[in-house]
Length: 342
Image (cartoon, rainbow, N blue to C red; front, side, top):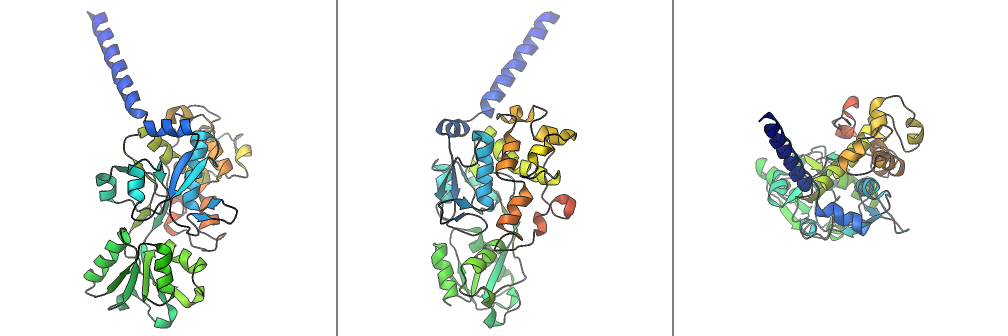
């Protein structure tokens, strides 16, 4: 009787594991492997996030996320096809399968997470919505914008946030809604709007690269929202989702452990058990994700750690020269934090 019960329990466990394994794998990851290329939805060229250079190559912190995922799955950070995704159409492009994921300054919200059939990866940039005005207006605070004309893109959290902010502060305003970001910014710099509102990083990018005279414009001190920017992908492929999350976690963990694209080969000799697991010297982490054991090593070698990516795209080494702020590691006063690699 004991043997029968033991056999039944073993069979039940095997069935459970088989079902779990079947649910874990998914067609999105299989399609990427068969295609030999990751299709990544990005926005129109925006310095710091996704910028198409004259050499035909894309750069930016969101581009680095795509490259890291390709390095983990396909072994090569360059095996990415970048597809323009407008603010209005980006979610449909994911839902329809036109792109494998969005890495496109997309804010993670409850309704997007639940109503659109999407999942989100780890937050790559903690941002907030702000306002930019011509310096000549003499405005020092967003509280002084009563009656202002505001340039804003439709179909974004930005449009909702600005309406909420003005309503909460009992101020009227007139919105100028233009879908094309290039046309919207042109309207602002041509004086059609008093104010341009967007994520603060986007405003800094616009001022640095698109303003006729950057010093003629000022970002107001208020941030009126939380804008956690994260990669978005379809519900249903848990393994692909795990890889997207852990590709970013690997970059954050590498920075915390002092592993860079320059010293990653040397760091393979480290005695630190966590570093050995991350770099695949001690096997097991790759198998858990369904990739080979050098997945994180390749990400760090080919793309860099999180700090390297932030600094060259948004920080001191970029045209934007933004402070890290909340995007510092948790050990340095920020909130960037990766779960343990074990």
